[in-house]
Image 1 (cartoon, rainbow, N blue to C red):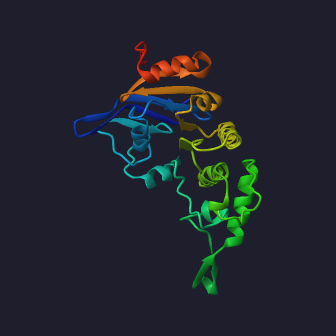
Image 2 (image 1 turned 45 degrees about the vertical axis):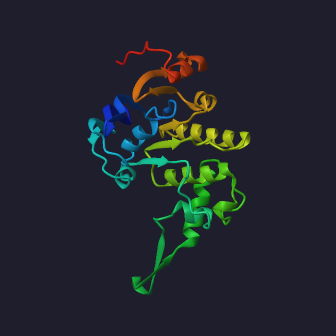
Image 3 (image 1 turned 45 degrees about the horizontal axis):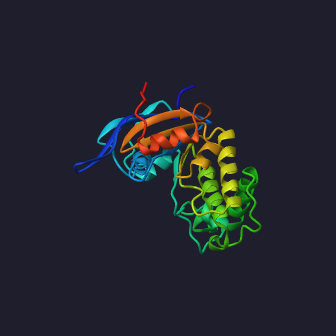
Length: 253
């Protein structure tokens, strides 16, 4: 199966610091890849190159078999690459439907097209159907985002990406600062995305969560890829050793 995303020898330097050094990895349709490493390992820099925030100094990015140059986040979104950072980029004073359509509001035309107004009924109906399809339960879509739980807000951010045809989802610490029940809800949602064929890259310091949802785990250490293991072929202890730099037995293909 052809990878949805393939990065080849990506390198990013900031002055004299090499934050990512010739990293290669593939992500296939319907696959969850856990991206782990200690602080400063290069995880955030790597995904920011894929999402158009940073430009690589060297290396190539292929998406759906085609070499792409992603110069800004809007170009990544046009390709179908959606990145959900820890701040979620939600408007706390708006309701669920307004957030799902935030920046891409649906409008109705009046007076022969001379006047266009927000089509709130359409956005609410589409949001409700989307959340039902994703098996996300929010008591009222009229609630303001800042009144929802952390897990519900994370679900809204994921649902927004799905509605706008995400082909690849990147999630940065999706279970951070959530209670145990809310963590479980987010992990279940990631599994449902995988079952629908949407590949997901999950960045997390919580190894338990990574093992709970990932098919494969990629480990970065000081800007280098030091491991690429299927979950069924590794262990928590081994992954921690790679994260700490205690193993140097990895050989890339």
